[in-house]
Length: 241
Image (cartoon, rainbow, N blue to C red; front, side, top):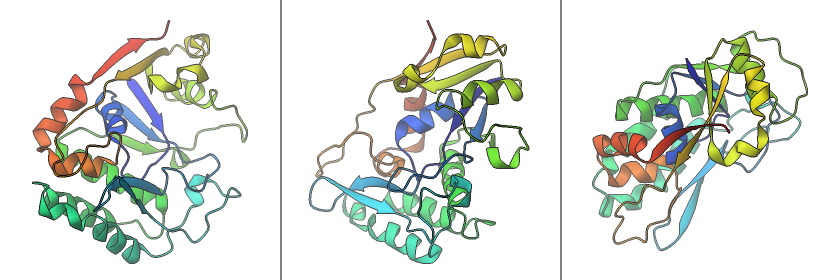
C-alpha cells in the first residue's frame, strides 16, 4: 500500500491531486500546529482584471496556539458566498464554470462539516475527486487513535505514521525531499518515494495563464477526463536515492 500524508488545504493546487491520484491511501494530517495565512484556509484563483485573487475562509480562532484540527470557520455560509463571488467572472469565458460552482456549493453544504475547517477542506477534496473520478480513500489523522509524540521534527512524522499503518511505500512531493532520510523509512519497512511533476499548462484566454492556482481554476478550463489524464501524465514516481 502506497501512502500519502498531507495537511488539509482549501481547494489546493493541481499537484496536490496528482499526489492523491498516485497513492492508495491518504491521511489528512491535522494534528500539528495551525499556521495562519497559509494554504490551509485560503488559495488563489484568477482576478477579474489581471493576476491572481485570494479566496479564503475566515476563522473564529486563527492562532498558532491551536492545532489544525481545532480550527473553526467563522461563518460557513458567508465563506461560501464569498468564494462563489470571486469565481463569478469565470462565467464569461470558462467552459466549465457552472460545474465548478456546483463543486463549491456541494463542498460547503456537505453533511457533518459543522464549523470544522478540516472537515470543510476534506469535503472539498472529496467533491473534486468524485467529479474527476479519482479514488480517494482517506482517514483523518486525529481520528485514528495513533500514539504519536507531541513534538516531532517536520521529517519525523511521515516515517512514524507510515510504519504504524503498515504502508509499503510513502509518497511525497519531490520538493520536500530534503526533509526526509531514506533510512528512517527503511527502518520501519517502508520505501520512500517522491512524486516529480511538470506544470500542467492550459488555455485561459482572455486571461493570462498563471501556474499553481487552486484546482478550481484548472477545472474551470478543462473537462474532467482531461484533468484526470493530466494527473497521471504530468507526474512520475521516483524512488529515493
